[in-house]
View 1 (cartoon, rainbow, N blue to C red):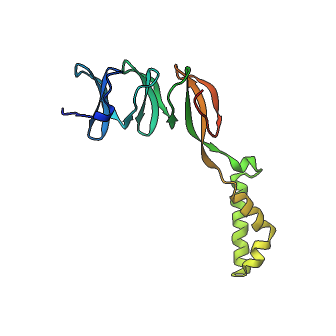
View 2: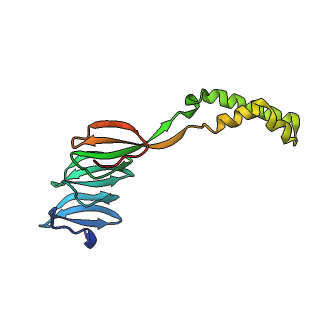
View 3: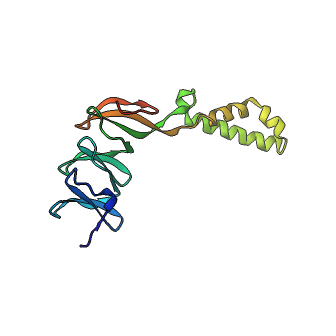
Length: 171
């Protein structure tokens, strides 16, 4: 097997050299022994004893021994600082519920609006002034969306501050 050394990622500080094979990344030690298979989409530099690794669009951490210490389970991870790392996952927010609508209610309103279109044809002024149409438009604006929510984990991967923030920074 032929590996390509990634010069910009070579680092004597952590005792590893980053390698690339067919667009995937791994690590070898100073003796050339493979420490992390070349299966990862990305491996970051070590910082505070840990390096971010990415596998199939999920992120986690390895330690300086090349061991996976936080499995690839997050959408975004930031470096550890003072024993905590900012992590984030995309989470569905059920906005229908937050605004008092269920999906069934919105679907039902949509059917009512279709009937209004059939009834009034191209006379949109009558359609858009109709209360059902206005309610439907308001409800449609509250569709559920996937939002990135941030929290904090410790060095064991345990959530210390729950995923509740739209953004977060290191301590």
